[in-house]
Image (tube, rainbow, N blue to C red):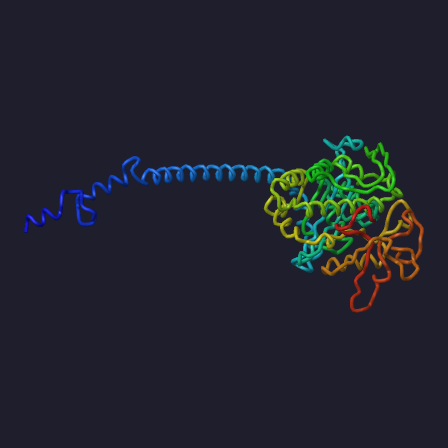
Length: 433
């Protein structure tokens, strides 16, 4: 038996059945681990490569996170906070209007005409004093499906409440042109003046300066406008041919500020031009995908944040981004611009006063977050033979009697009494106005 077994088993390692010959185990191990004899070197190299790849990816992620954190902090640090205005507004909290529709928001945008610092090239520096050059009440609908931007003329005669100057002294309540409020008491005084005029609670305030406006236009690659006639205005530092063209930041600033060289020279015409320009800017930002492209968005954010002074509720990048995120899907034809109904002031045709009851109707609708229809001025007033936009059908005054509201619908008593005002939307082509 022993001989038979020995003969059948054969020499160690020669069996065809590795499972029955313990001597095959070392050979199997050798086949797995010996260089050049099997898949083990490939697996080892693969594991080595995967470790280095994971390490490399980790370093890239950490570096990107570090850069992202640095960029976030840089943008966040650009924003200036107006704490004094916040304190002033708290002092008068009991006098301020109450919020009517809590999900809607009203933001006051103030363009400063300070000639101090980098802005002295645009006019005489009178020691740092400033007035609001452009003021827009931005109403964001509660459903975030529409935006209404209402301009307030700088020369509008209004009651300015008691305000505190930077040195702590108080002004008296007085009738004066609207842009004096900013000179008297800064953002807080302007905010309270608008609230008393309109009855609309202002949720946030933003002040934008000249230099930042230019940078924002340059950051989006310029904005297209259309001129009916050539412009040569040394005061506005502007010289442009007629026709469609793209303006850079410097040209854009002159374009929105020019008064005597474009149109009829009125402040109302200038506000219309500013509204059209802002509408075109909004359209470009949305249609060019700037909000969805980090590489293009960063320069815009950098320029915007450098130009902003805000209340504490919007003084950080997270809050601003959340605001932009809510608004980026608003259709451009639902981003509307108009001017408060106004006419030449009875005591001085070079100043303005509100047209009533049209202005109060507009304020009431914005307070209630109700819809407002905006169409080009030439489409208003066609039904009654009245002067387009003239609340009483009478012409005259420095702007031809226009007050930007159609009486055909403003006082309607039907099931859908939506007032229609002259203005434009962000989808409008500037060469088809």
